[in-house]
Length: 389
Image (tube, rainbow, N blue to C red):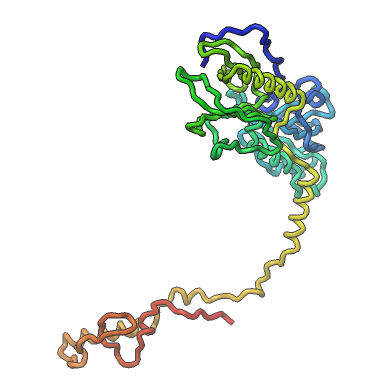
């Protein structure tokens, strides 16, 4: 962290962006919750005829899938609602439940386990439409799709330290990201000796990485920047970035020479920070209608695939797999009988002939008795399977 920093005259802190809490908290009964979405938050799908079976049984409501959270609000009692941030979801799945209010009719339900402030919340959102066709349809598929997209787009929203964001000295660009400038010779003042690296400024974030070690880096979305200043330090004028509380509350310092280039970068970052605050990009792109069409096409393709029919296949006699070669059994049995006769003094001299060389195997072996071939003794298991007529 920086030490002995004093604010320079003429540098006022940037206006703070609206603190992002929607994806990181679980809230209940917030007035007009479903009407007051934050800047950049978009509703991606609506799921109607949904009941909050654990919290508000008997109230028919609507489930809203946004790019930051799930919102359920009652259509019967306007004051009842809840907000579940995707970052707080620990487990989710669908299950079939039986509704007592409709003759124990089977219905599809969405189960969510959320954890917030060391408190566990269980939610069960049940389809109360009564339509039998909805039981076999993936009516909650958009919830799972958007939740997976949220997990894969954390770089748009959260500060990341020492991530795999740079390859061969080049920033790995995110979808919809545009790089505006790259600044070399930037000293990171987080340690006493400092680390020399480079800045990459885009429309979504500010990235710094060390020249000597690319894995020593920081990806800082504008969403997590609380203030930008130029301050005087013991190293000279420095760019000081204060991260938001949700971004760890860090104070980051960077020195750039000459001071004129530092001032240019400061103005550029202030401008991009303000523009981003007006319309943030949370990285989630999803079209519910396209997703439903893809599911319908996949279901139609599966229905057109040839069905399994028993008459199209031949049944194999599996008993043959467990049978040892009968000729080998006979050969071994005759050998054992020959040894018994030898003990009784009835063995001929021909039974004790010298070994012969076998070209197929490449070594000397006992002469094979008449009526047998090498292939008969070599194949322990049957080589030809027969089908049952």
